[in-house]
Length: 172
Image (cartoon, rainbow, N blue to C red; front, side):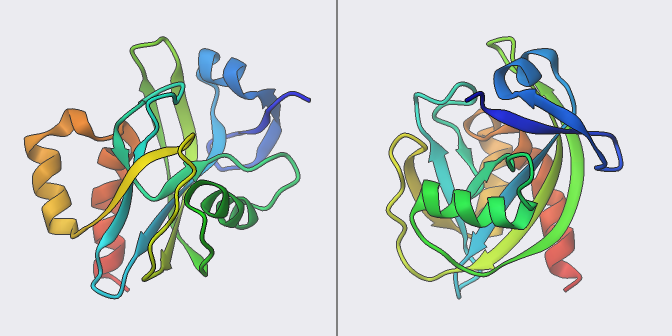
């Protein structure tokens, strides 16, 4: 079975499905999600993408991210992938969404309507090594400073979403 993802318009209305790699080759707008997990010290759990990932390998990024399957609620997909990638469960709440587009060195593109979910967890994950090569807790301030000093160590979508995340957190 093909790895189908949900194509959307700029208001997140479903307009069809497409095979994941074809969609990324053609840069079509599709539904995605990003999960940001914080501990009780308000540190963010980052994952370092596995070196075998099809784009952005070895870069640091948010706790997990992916695409819902056709017919799957985005919140359910976020919980599923958190369990699959980082091997733990926690409550998630949707914080905000945004659209971004990025072209990668390997010719693939991300053009995503990205739903951002936030959760709390104080344990240690046991990441699937096919998804995440490493992980760490980091304060938002430390992350922002390191992203300024070493922007090439971070995924495009993390750099785009961090200001939106900080603004959201300041207003809750």
